[in-house]
Figure (spheres, each protein chain N blue to C red):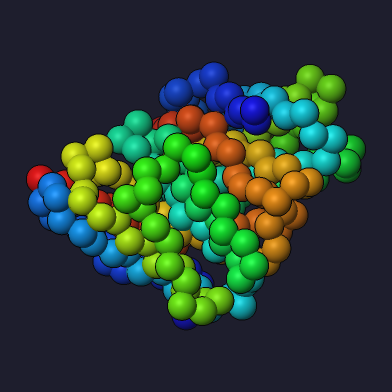
Length: 116
Length: 113
């Protein structure tokens, strides 16, 4: 069965600093996609960044970047120059390429607080 | 111009009632989903559906049923509501099942009295 583990229930960072959220996953598939979603207090689920497993290059979206280690099944999210608006729950998710499911399997989330 | 919209945003009802949550997407996506987020913020897939195939998570009680009148809508019907059904329910959509990201609605907070 596919699983996603986020080992940090809560983290905090000072505004303008850098923080890394960890995520590991387990899948028997060779082709899959990985995502980070953000859920601010407003409850919306917002896509932050995604990574295709067959691409070795780490994905980057402005201040957000990932460190994808396929052999270790690790997919950490780095947030640079943290802003108060980054305060949210962050969910790591995995989605298989093959089969008929394609459903997102989520980790339990990391609550990030950015402090002024 | 909301992409995925759910109604209502809040739903308070009594145990044993039957209720529905509506979901509509205007993105032209062919696949829609329902997720349940429990009190510990854990998100779990309930259903995924396109016009060809409904996939049900085996842990979902059969009191829950998705109904899709057309490609842009996937409503969630819940019969005989129980206390444990209290949660936030998210609708999502994507183009295709796999490599395209899912766009989520704002969620419906269901509270059972």
